[in-house]
Image 1 (cartoon, helix red, strand yellow):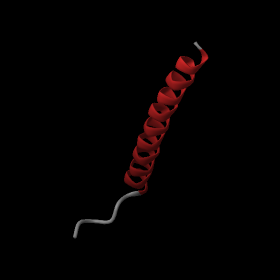
Image 2 (cartoon, helix red, strand yellow):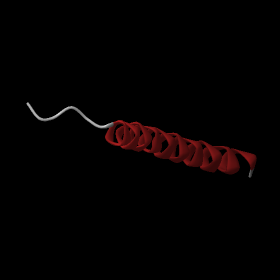
Image 3 (tube, helix red, strand yellow):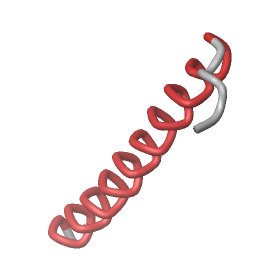
Amino acid sequence: MGKPLTAEQQRIRQLEAENRQLREDNALLKKASAFFARELK
């Protein structure tokens, strides 16, 4: 396999995973808010 990851590379991977999760959460919240906005009309 390759060389072990440096602390900086590990941090980048962690932040990328967190970023991906937050984007998914944000997309879900947008869909939910659109749904409730339609329900209120």
